[in-house]
Amino acid sequence: MTKFNFAMRSTKTIFGVILGLFFVLGTAVQTPGQSKKDTPLNVMSYNIRLNTSGDGVNAWPNRKERVAGLVRFHKADLFGVQEALPEQMKDLTARFPDFDYVGVGRDDGISAGEHMAIFYRKSRFEKQRDGHFWLSPTPEKPGLGWDAACNRTCTWIKLKDKITRKSFYMFNTHLDHRGKTARQEGVQLILKRMPEINKEQLPLILTGDFNQTRPSPVIDAVLRVLSDAKDKSITPPYGPDSTSGGFEVRKGGNTIDFIFVNDRVRVLRHGVLSDSFNLYYPSDHLPVLAEVQIQ
Image (tube, rainbow, N blue to C red; front, side, top):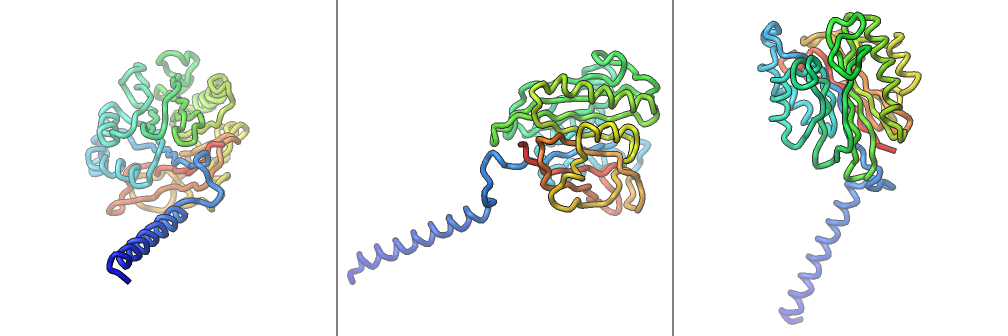
């Protein structure tokens, strides 16, 4: 055998090995039967706790990197935040340059007060429509609703997934922490507005801090229209049973943060994320994460 033929055979052998590796790697990352239209996405609901110096060591400047790091590590493609003040929105946008957001300050409809914002990955989604309304008898302008202690809003967005080419809606809200009537009337307003906005009856996700547990009239009203993503999860739900109990790592608390979905959203995984640092959580609420497929 000449040196030339030997070299050619060696080259072919190496090339064959490389092709084999590409085949193995390619099949390793694909789920059998899954196509681009089935590509899942991760959605999160996170009450990040407003910025107040009264929180001492747990004040926002001391934990903003941890909040951002948690969201980034768990690879959220969409996340709805609650209690985000203007300076917190500025911090989040600086730490997520690959995301855009919709949502306004609840006190003036521009930037004043807490935001119930929805952040979305720009490389993955195209914004088609968006809006917001106040949870009050005058939903088109800033105002206090019923017996609420604070102005409350609901933010919504229609997105098109650039991978699956499917469109869907996401709503994000924060019900009042004191007003019983405000919570009940507020959630009824959201449930009334959803079909008015989602006239196409597209897949829909609702995230938020509802300041109510299951069972309760507020959550029961939602469950007559939507499903708790935790109940629909194909894999067993992960994490603790509560989402709100303070900064310190301890037992107890209540589940008042939820991700709800309509019947056109398939839930693959659901988790309450209890990531902590030196026995403190990044917020006084734990984020809720769901991996979903838009049907």
